[in-house]
Image (cartoon, rainbow, N blue to C red; front, side, top):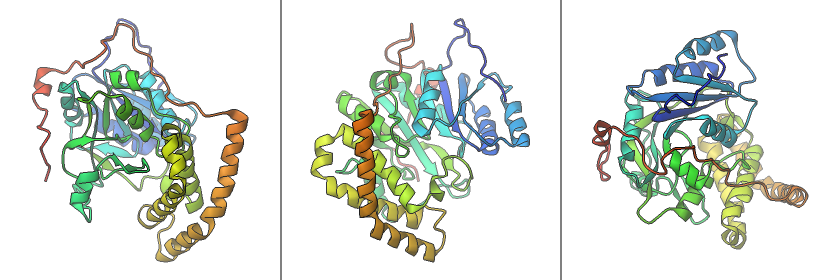
Length: 368
């Protein structure tokens, strides 16, 4: 595997750093690198946080050949977890604008980077999420209630649970960012910090919580349906979220709620605590029925759903006891990882060529 290239102080940083998290998907990573290297953009690097524990020889050789391109840096790490790997990629990157994509996804089109970059002609834009599509043959996956999806895209409900709807088609200001098909200026992360690493799931909201709390009234996060990312849901490897059992998935959601949501909204969390139990039950059942690959037959869905309904309260009691034990013994887990400001870097603004800035579409645009 290609080692990290030495970067000298004389090297000018690229305008864009594409940050890729990769874990046990070297074949898919090679496909992604091929697409990224074909991007019609004149100034970008690719930083791969490669954490694989299984490295097939042929796939490794393919990735190694692609890594000979001077724009690619592959950094080997032991498994870091989702937010840990993303934070490591940010700290290793050199670009003014950071664009995020995982090894099981693909950018659609060779103008993907330019489309993301164009949004930051407005310095008040703190971050952008693009549209998700399921495959190249089907441009969008329709929602049963498209109007509701447009209304709630990347927003938080009263329990501060993130509503995604990232396959919708309306450009608008939003409350949150996704971890893939997202573009964030380095200055945003220097100002608000990185992603909390004390959760095994739902690692995106911690940053959004802080941005919404600290941004100025004229600053915003944006959902832009024009930069599109293909989600390859059946690629094996990675965190294997879709093959978990119901109780394991439920415990991960429990951990997120107690370590992240409870930290940023303690009064709300305490006052509405029973509602969070129902949130976990509802979300896990929804996941079993619509997203889980482990529960792929009607019988398995019924069995798993029944199991969650009957076991969640005793499991919750055990998890809560374990959580309190760790808190008493080790204290509160750390939050708001810091990104140090680069020496000599401007405090605000991106180096976007005029021709890119002129391509930014109006906020009211909608994609068919």
